[in-house]
Amino acid sequence: MRAIAAWYAVGTDRRPSPFLEKRGGNPAALFDALRELGYPHTVVAISSEGFRKIGEVLCPFTAILSRDAGVTPAQLQSDDLPAEVNIRGVPGWVYDQYSAEGRRALQCYLKSDALGAKWVRQHVSPERRVRYLGDIVFRLEGGLVKNRLCWPTGALLRRMVDQECYSPPDIFELMLQDIPKLNEVRNYVC
Image (cartoon, rainbow, N blue to C red; front, side, top):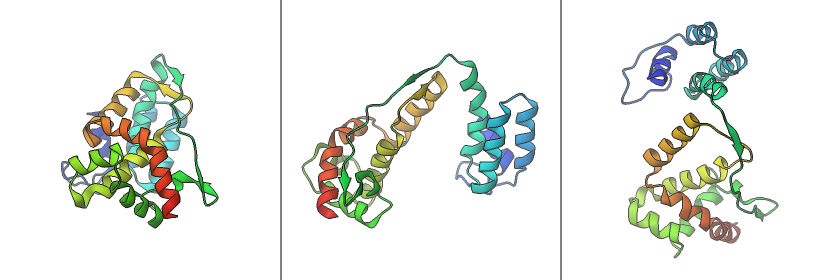
């Protein structure tokens, strides 16, 4: 509920959603209110500046979550990072859905007998496959970190994104195993 209220407060006209009524907002008033309510000043300042520059609703969401992250006992945990492969002098993950070579590699990978490719062919319509797979790979390669802050709200949000946006989550495991195969295809295409 806090996220929806924040979205309305900054204005749904900037980042529309088919589920929210379109209206203007007052971002400065939201960030001022967060400061007055005791949210961490530095995080609110950074979030406010981020929103001013890029207009993404994730900026006020970050400010709202910052208070929960600061009061919950947390620990750091590193994700298992796949071995990085060098292709044409750059890391393999550079060839993602946002480059022509990366899209070609995803298209070629989808024609392979790899488990992830088979899963995508079974569960995703042909016109959406490259984009879907690109999103999965981007999330895997860009979302794995050293020293992840583990706290209940963060784990809940991550699980919700994985299950509700990309369900079922087994595609993540399949693609994590298939990253070496995808890198072979990237190397071949490039």
